[in-house]
Length: 326
Image 1 (cartoon, rainbow, N blue to C red):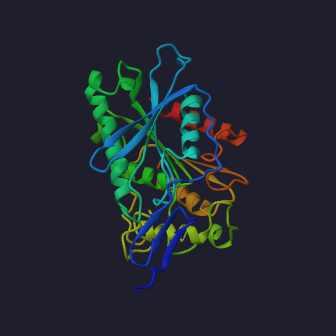
Image 2: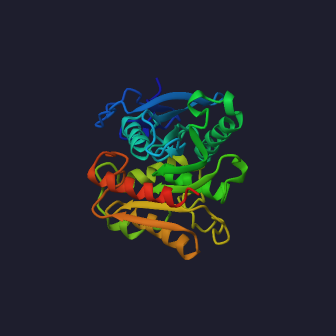
Image 3: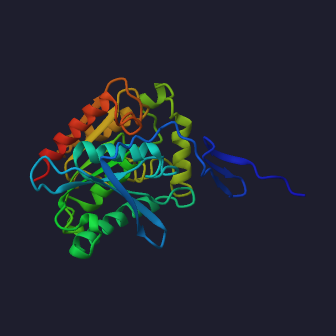
């Protein structure tokens, strides 16, 4: 009788990888984030990729806009989870999208994507582009598109991509891929990118990583595990998927980008890496705003989108969207 396989990787019991290559995912999760749905936003799920059975969730405010006949801007939300866990259906991300839709009076499109290690990078990045292509198809279909998108209700020329953590990493790669004006998605027009503590990596520790304290929901061991499970086998966190400024990463000096808003918590482990990313782009002449919230951990907005500090974040996002809408 053979021995049982050993546990090789464990992400808080949600995802476990064993020595024989088998993978266990806990589907019946218990969350500490109660859903806060006041009924002001309607939402529904749609399939955007039949081949990979991938869905997205659309959020639409029920009330009319404050400006007469104003079409809704579109916020394309990419959830976090280290490329290994997470779903737009998780209550923290669901709450976040409800809040974004109601507070910013926007149509929010939140796609799921393939997760590692079953589907290692670049699978998630390919899916993020596929979901944008779905939105492009809706815009081109006009009256035959989904009913929530018909009749000029949404403004396909005012699309903002918001990525949280690993979703912020994907937002960066979309920004580089699509370039200013997002011409390949015509008539979709991406106006800007909002990166909430984007999950970047590197083999050399930053000061906040090396000296920072473990967070309630994040530590260095978990960050390293995410990269081991999500990157192509045999590569380190200096891979271009993880490190935009790694030794083998293409230079961003001559790459033109749409405006960016980068936000980080002041005491999160990723703070120095996120700030370095924003400062480097600023020094290259890119239009990048960097905002840091003192005393805040990773996910402070996404996990509590109704807090007082979240209200400030929403004001900053609203201002960014207004300044870059036309």
